[in-house]
Amino acid sequence: MQRQTIRSLRKGEFFRLTDSDTAPVWVRGEYSREARKYSTHKFYDINHEQQLPGDRLVYVGFTF
Image (cartoon, rainbow, N blue to C red; front, side, top):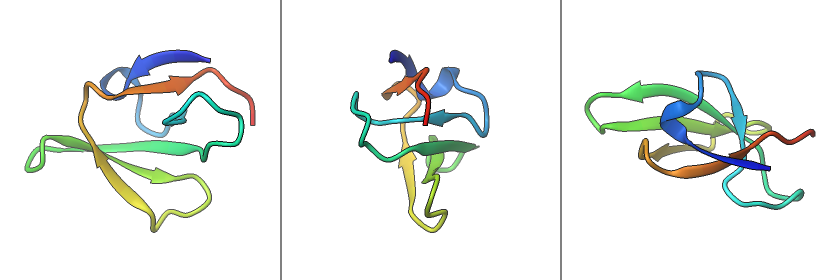
């Protein structure tokens, strides 16, 4: 898997927080100006939302 920052991903792109095949898949959402963070949610549970800073490194380039 490749590492990228949240800021460099497009809206709706999939990523993982750890370099593991069993780690949950997350989806990048909108940027929140108030919080100055990006909204993300789990692929299988859209109610599980998390705010992440733009410089957070995530893993992309996987097949699930």
